[in-house]
Length: 466
Image (cartoon, rainbow, N blue to C red; front, side, top):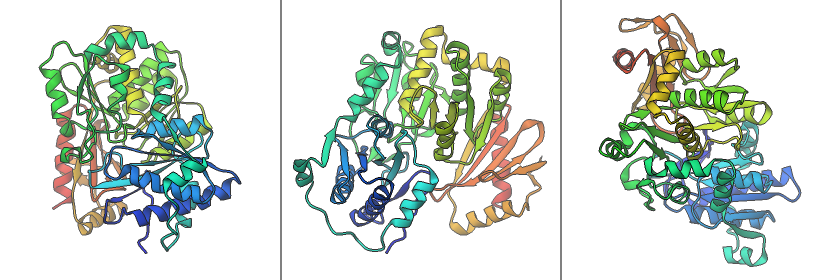
């Protein structure tokens, strides 16, 4: 049988190739066995996003659980990952399952596991599920209607539960007034109905159900959001742009001129807002690829900072077990105190808009305020699509510390928390890391501005591919 492995954030594979009904049944079977090992009467939440086959895979998962006697709440329509996580937390369910491949291309689907606290399951639980996945196809369970009629499976409106939570946590009067200034791009993903209901006067892009995402990976990065950037450039009434990925747990953000605001800057803005305006404290937990400026601002604000491996599950462990102000990844996955320990693109977008509305400042003015404390900077990234032989050779060279320089940039030290970060002159660095979910080698660089960061990236790419 095909060996199923969970990556940095769940199991993902290509639909109808290895992500099949048979393999989903196997993963659901392993999950059900683990749930019953945890509790004699387990409860589970199951949802799905806008990808092809979402309801089919989710309902099949619910049927497997029901066949094991597990009380299951099934989403009554497509939902975001944060909605599933919140429902898992609100219902005190033992697990939440979301059928999604997040930001991956439309040919993929996936299976994420959420824990009772409303965030990614800890690696130990995921490993136990993986070990229990059978090497055979489980017996096909009864039809969904049988389990619905018996009451062991119930439909649940997770979207309304999420909206109620948002409305009770934000100044909606302030945000509603800000609505006409917002352009929102759902990227055809699961966040498409939320902003429409919370901020009905917002300008909406790609807020329709299209399982193929018009052929574009629903990752909220600059190259995938040309329409949002252009909309802001050509409409002076708009103050900012928000985008969320396929399952709406990642954020992309733009200023009033249509310039992309990356996660590094968003993290810094959140630190300032939450400490200076909300009076909050706590540790900032960030992944290995996040800018060093976060450490600089944390020191200035009297906050501790911790660096983890790539993958929000590592950040989540700190949020569940400690006093964490912000948990954040470079890739747009950010969580804040006062919400569940889960990435949430819509929630973070609302926090930023609340900051803008409260201060009366543009996002660019707020970034300039950050620069007065940290200095200016830029982090850029190349995704190198290489064959396995090339990728493995480069990673081996990093591991063996074979690189002493990248072009004119001399390497002073190397860190290997997750991937390899090479420290260069003047506080600059370059990092090399293979993707955990795609055939890609990611290369990141930090410089004092974008031009310097790209020069470092170009020098590194030329050197490692020669």
